[in-house]
Length: 208
Image (cartoon, rainbow, N blue to C red):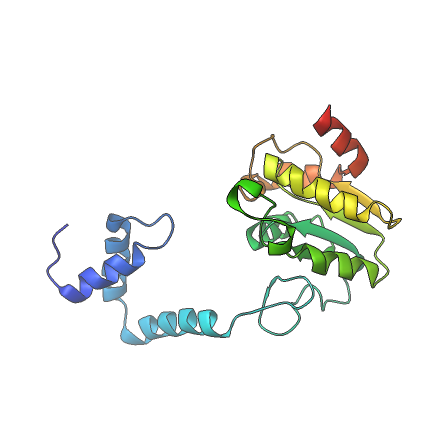
């Protein structure tokens, strides 16, 4: 691709680094920005820069946040005794979009995957166990993609919490095995969440 300007070429190259953005799409975005007034482009650049430099992670659930505690954990209308465990922030967004869950979350930051060198110590599992043991939690919902790594992570956490007396559940198998939670449609995800299963049944089915 030949560019008439080095400045445009540099902008296209940077935008094309984003996931799902190829050179042609990046060029369309750059040409669109060129048509905008400078104030509009400056606001976009400032918002992206501030986001990257000022974003924080909630000290309780590890969700992204503008402050020390995220808006979900600090919301008095949320059920603080019901924790939904998710792999990443994208999955948290997917569940929030269903508007079917009114508890709080815990973001693991990944899944256990020995082949990739990812063990429990690389994830936010210890903080989950500390959180559960230090408060009046009544239910932990494992909303994790039904993959080999997901099931391994569910099994590990369930073993750590099996003597806690806390109700352990998981989303129903409305999500096909091997599917990613963030790509499930909202209706399927909402149904899987509302029809969640006791974790011992899920583990039994997975090992059967």
